[in-house]
Length: 204
Picture (cartoon, rainbow, N blue to C red):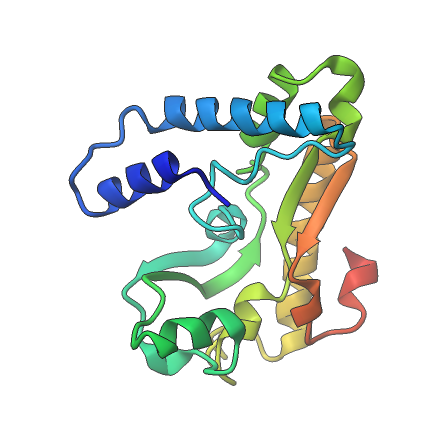
């Protein structure tokens, strides 16, 4: 659960009621507080609560070459039974933003998560750096959301195998960057929603 003060700040920014200049400082404060709570409770894995992200899936997919973040997507592209989409539709809404494939997918070589990890290191005892936990969305996250034929343009990928092949390579690069920085604890979120291909897990 994100702190109310952080949620209120992000809502104000989204509604153009706040420029958000002090958002990073507020995120720092909230992360310090949640890390202290975890430390006091004796947790072995230390997380920043994903407080730098507006949603748990974070900034990985939008940062990839070939992927584009769009706002106000058409509801017709989504699978209605996917849990988060179903929750939106129950409220007669659609996600305010989503990420679509528009070209060949590839990692830029720059991690959008490395700053989150480095900040956690800066406020965590050195002997506990190996216990810091970072989360990544499941590799199928955006493929699962979209109806057949909507996950990627046919002129870009001929089939799911080619699409997931490039997704897997992007994950390998991301994980290598984080590993080289000292990360040893990665959690893949929503793996229970994995649909295909079965070989992707071992490839990542």
